Image (cartoon, rainbow, N blue to C red; front, side, top):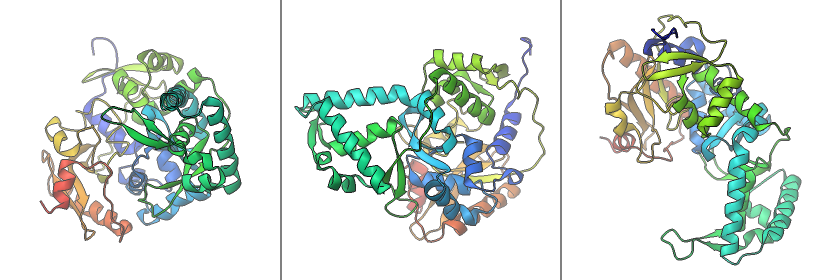
Length: 396
């Protein structure tokens, strides 16, 4: 290109995606820790997403549930906690300190201030009272190991105190101290979500004391997190980086400078790669298909998505808030969506048929059968429903 920067085209970006996101058959992973490490973070606001995202990338998908539960609840090599954009993710445990310092501290301060303000407005007890309650709750949680909010309230009854939120407004509601306090403690990195009350699809979790981690410098943590993500998802634009991290543009630029990121040219403008990632990635010619879940980190990884998602099919695959539903992939791009019906059948539909022939359709059928095989009798309904997913479920 005229500016002297290397041009990275759509084809190479799709090759990188298939390899680095462990979607190409030869790149599949041995365990959930490897999957999470490759992707940096798995969306955790819908519990099923974690397991489905892992299963799509394991060489032996039959081990998905047992191995992911082992990593989350037995070995604790993965941790579910608040991270970027005030969203719940699953990270490798060794990243807990980095995530907390790079993204959690700012959000945590805002969340605690909002809780205290809401309590004061409602005439609830003050900050000193809340501090006493949280110390008692954390002590009880440490004794129990894991506990629900109701179980903690048996040890610390003040957690049951309730106060009116946004009185007189259209969204007025009543919150318990436990609901808001445990959320704040989660954002502060002091508690994490533990084992669910039901199956791996359950959204009701026990709480556990967060694993101990050092307090890191915020700027250094931001550089570390951005470097990991760029190695997994680069090249990416400044807009992509700002969207994924939820940081200010000044923080993104500072972190890019700190890691010595290199600028490249993309179809949408300037992108960045790590200093070690400037060389072209050759295409092995290996075809691959994947069925990825709602909120999968690959589908949600970039703000600018035209290089892997045709704009004309977005409306069918996203809800009104911008959450992606289950997607069907062929060689690095979204070509359709899928759903699971009430009888357990996994069904799918192509929306972008350009270049999708018999080989692609057969590969997609195989992936649908592989998914159905390990999910078994479990029924999965995305937390955020999308037009195509609802239509497929209803038999349309």
